[in-house]
Amino acid sequence: MKRIALLGATGSIGASTIEVVCSYPEEFKIVSFSFYRNLEKGKQLIKRLLPQFVAVATEKEALALSKEFPNVQFGFGLSGLVTAATMSEVTMVLTAVSGSIGLVPTLEAIKAHKEIALANKETLVMGGDLVMQAAKEHKVRILPVDSEHSAIFQCLQGNPRENVSELLITASGGSFRDYSRAELKNVGVKEALCHPNWSMGKKITIDSATMMNKGLEVIEAHWLFQMEYDKIKVILHKESLIHSMIVFKDGAYLAQLGASDMREPIQYALTYPKRVEIKQATPFDLTTIEALHFEKMSFERFPLLKVAFEAGRAGGTLPSVMNAANEVAVEAFLNQKIRYLSIEKYVQEAMMKHQNHPIPSLETLLEVDRQTRVMVNEWIKKGLFE
Ligand SMILES: NC(=O)C1=CN([C@@H]2O[C@H](COP(=O)(O)OP(=O)(O)OC[C@H]3O[C@@H](n4cnc5c(N)ncnc54)[C@H](OP(=O)(O)O)[C@@H]3O)[C@@H](O)[C@H]2O)C=CC1
Ligand SMILES: CC(=O)[C@@H](O)[C@H](O)COP(=O)(O)O
Ligand SMILES: [Mn+2]
Image 1 (cartoon, rainbow, N blue to C red):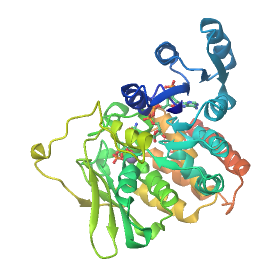
Image 2 (spheres, helix red, strand yellow; image 1 turned 45 degrees about the vertical axis):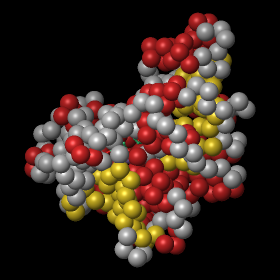
Image 3 (cartoon, protein in one colour; image 1 turned 90 degrees about the horizontal axis):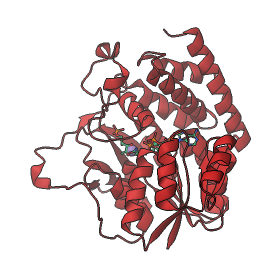
């Protein structure tokens, strides 16, 4: 039986993971999980999943919950996440928290020899070098959950890496894919949150619209598959049915396609290397698909993708600056403090101001993340780009 720590149980990936886990109770058990702001949902999950340990946001909440659920242990903050991920009963950690908070618990879980099912792409964007080194050193497998990386991982099975010349990542184009740059000037939060194909958390949905999600995914693919940036390409594919492809040196393409349903890549990560019947999935019928469209990506229309390639190529602390600035700017947009097009301005400004550290320690990465947040929040307060 796989005994799972689910970091971010109250989110979108968390919910899909719980469905997969509960469809195979004899194979999987969630022994620990975390939640953050969603106390009501968190409590429902405690009653449903009967975990041994739960990580919450604050000490006050942890104390109150210990009284309400005396058979469950509680932790809080970052140390709570680390305990949930490293406790001896856990064999696999599924990282479904949103944002840079995922890095430390993932690294600690690797050091504690837990298998990782990685949804939290920000972990590799910030600390790809450290995380992949730690995984190698501790002989820990990192299984992709992100749909594009799961697709590439599935295509790579049984194919020697030296035969692969390119990774081709598909992008839906997000909620504003048919808008010109001029039409983006006055777009609002509600419309930005309408992803055409996927139902996801708010932050990643905005990242899909700005194409930052694809930028983060390019960096994630670089680290997961040890592929040079020149050999990672992004292509627009508005149906989100081909989840990504690999190109072989002899010119053959191999694609993975299926419904836009995260339960599939999650289940693959949980059961890997086995494939088992999926019990809950969106029906997928090729005969109902009229056409699959592909379009060249435009860096002019989606400047944040170009910015992410630059950050990835530069390496060091620059991807962490990009990520932190983006997290702060997206949050501010969601709270209607800045305009949609200002997200990219804050990210670019933070990166321009940064002096890169080429080979950072974990402490340096975390400090850069913290400082960038403070700086961008101050800029937003002053209305730098409004
Ligand atoms: N959704 C999807 O289909 C996909 C998501 N991903 C990646 O997976 C991750 C999760 O995405 P998604 O499920 O959509 O996000 P959601 O916003 O739906 O969920 C995020 C989860 O993280 C928790 N959380 C948020 N901030 C913190 C924090 N500071 N400390 C501890 N916990 C926190 C939330 O708790 P609470 O709700 O209680 O506040 C929630 O459980 C992201 O990194 C995303 O990029 C990758 C591929 C697809
Ligand atoms: C489901 C998933 O993996 C998301 O990251 C998805 O890819 C978002 O879609 P786009 O970024 O292609 O709009
Ligand atoms: Mn994805």
